[in-house]
Length: 489
Ligand SMILES: [Zn+2]
Image (cartoon, rainbow, N blue to C red):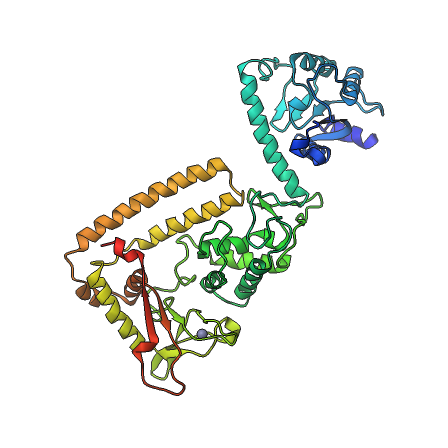
């Protein structure tokens, strides 16, 4: 009591909370009291208020005639008297929404009269503080045409609150199945969760995002929406705190009263430490231009021509196609493309002479260029970025991290951009059609050539050679051209 008085002198308001739980089996209101209390505490804290008493009516309607709400009546009595039964002065009332208090004019008038029995009281709900002394009931949207609108707005607010409340209780919020879990959203999907776990460990062990994305693809699982994996979506899955049991809402981790992240009731795939390390790693790699094919941004004119394109066609000890990106490495006075070591996710068994592979691929690529596109469009990456963003958006919406309004308005933007880029690309291709590709090639830098190849070729697979053979066998090199290239010409 003394403490409350001291706080009151420092400008805090002593308020009572009113909670009403409607009896409605369809809305699964079992957690209603707990939720409403929590929200009220939040509202109070935001408005420099201290809750001194809670009035709670369970299974009561606010408008049905003949229904007596004992705590509502008790609150009116306390407001009239000016103090709670324990003697605290009442400076105001907090509830989640005013329809908890009243839904008809008569009840509103009763509440209003008791509330105004003392001057200077405060009222606040989820929509903020309201001055009930200067606000007529008509303005509060209780009657007339405004009522319907106000009601639907309140319902949206409540849906949002319910979302947060569930997150704070550690319940899964998304109504759709997240990748890695079964449709109950609590238990782990054995196959998918293993892919996620290995993705985290792979990144922590130094694998590129592209390599990990490839593993996601190789697992045979798609995203829960059925989309093929892209580095953006894989990154988003692995950056999601859900995998360690945490939850992000509105860009922030959901924390409990103790300031620590709320631990969800679903099974976690990795430890919080591992998740944090991976999230930091992925944030570090983020840059404004988006990801390139290899998941890293190297200087365009250094390195090897086929970096990011050559993949290993060898077999792992388990008999799978290895498939990891091979990297260029100096060998003698030349260079080779080599599979990664087993600890880095490769089979460590396949390598091929660099210059010979480069020449072969260049020759084939020039053939493709002659056949198809007059010259590569320099803005292809912009198109790819928009495509990736669009599918990311879809995934986020699916996981209910963004709402419908945001989703559809952003989607419209992306689609408009996509359309204009495709148009740009077409007109560019027309303009270039007079320049012969081989002539252009000789004037291009290594980086430009690499970009041109990436646009033409999906992947170059290097099959294992005969043991001990030193001669270059072109049959070991398999080129998969890009399918969409045809649409450029
Ligand atoms: Zn390999």
